[in-house]
Image (tube, rainbow, N blue to C red; front, side, top):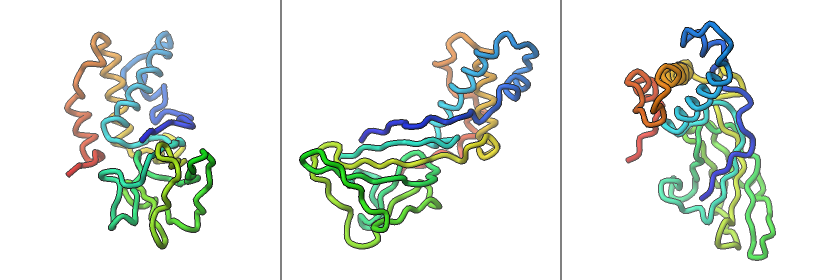
Length: 194
């Protein structure tokens, strides 16, 4: 399985002005640094929660459908990574000669309300690719929305707190554990694995 970012988020979930106000920075001298810290904080929140905050497009390449923890409902559903799922653009299957064929969208259902989102077969079974490796390619959009206001307030606050913490504690910031306040904000959004 390989997950590639096709289209990155167009904005950050926290505006530069909000990050500066939260960190009590009144000058413009370190705007580039603070913007970089906001992006890093967003990436860490996404890594900790397994969620995409701002809308973007991914391409997931699979060898087969029966991945542990990804199949559900007797093998009739396949869970996608990086919730929340917005839409599935395409599912392409590759044959032994490396020719890709789109799986017709009318043969599967995309459940964006589930967490994580999933693809369900309407009838029959998931199609088997002819290529043994990287025979399945799924292109999908994930994220809470295109605007910062679409992201839940607690996740935006976690990004603010992480960016401010990194700004105030510049030495060894990458190795620092998450502040307790941030852990509390992220807890409801973390997926529990059984």
